[in-house]
Amino acid sequence: MDRQKVRKAVLPVAGWGTRFLPATKAMPKEMFPIIDKPVIQFIVEELLEAGIENAIFVTGRHKRPIEHHFDINTDLERHLEEAGKNEVLKNIREISHMVNPIYVRQKRQLGLGHAVLTAEPAVGQEPFIVSLGDIILEKGSDNLSKMLDIYNRYGRSVIALFEVPEEEVNKYGIVDVEETEEGVLKVKELVEKPSPDEAPSNLAIVGRYIFTPGIFEKLRKTKPGKGGEIQLTDAMKLLLEEEEIYAYQIEGKVYDTGNPLDYLKTVFEFALKREDIGAELREFIANLLSTQNQLIDRP
Ligand code: G1P
Image 1: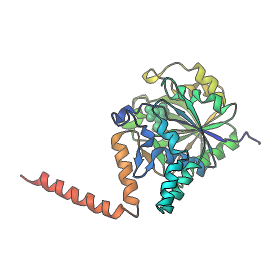
Image 2: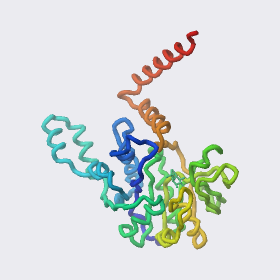
Image 3: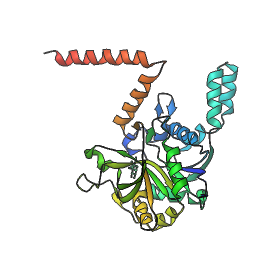
Image 4: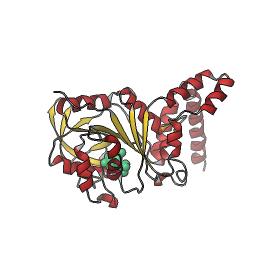
């Protein structure tokens, strides 16, 4: 069947980043580096791999560095050219042409659902992706393309899921599903951040969604929920009363960058894999740990 093609992605990036204050007082958490690449660039590269070039960033007042990152910086380019730093120059130029960006201001931070609704004028009446910036999915795992395949087959919203340990269900939207065909799940129930005994499963929403435009009408009707915020999960519950919602259990690793400890774990894992610094870092960590252990062992 001919479906309206998914061409746009919404990236809600207006949050305060309270878990990282004071670092996020003037600096967007989406610009935190995983060594030398900001988190938001990973999210954009994942979209490009799936063929999506139109990115609608829902931003706030201190998020300007994100705009600068995806813009052309002629002064920097000239400097790199004069310095003969051709490799870096090529990389910097590629980033400036990565996406067709649209920036929409979310004037008040009323929740993730409200952020998505703020993008409505830029999305229009067409299906769209929502990618959250906290989570990086392993490169090459092709999850978004597989979600787009499901959308193209069923013409309905599709969400990405991953399994979490029982004690972590209260950090995520949790979903109950049934399998409709191999690799395709159908959503039966959704709960935003339940306690372990309220959770219908341990399948969590991982921050990648494809929505039919019908979600906007539901977002307008969504009352403040968990934490007093307008929750995207609650709008999906309303959508589920009218349309099926499908789900896809992602493949590959999930890297959380949304809190200091998981962010650090992500940085270490990526750094250890790097050819230029991985070996030295491994040695440094081994030495550091053995010195610490000696200190602990000392009577
Ligand atoms: C949001 C969503 C939640 C989802 C999570 C994924 O929560 O509300 O349903 O599971 O992202 O990262 P947040 O992490 O913004 O509190």
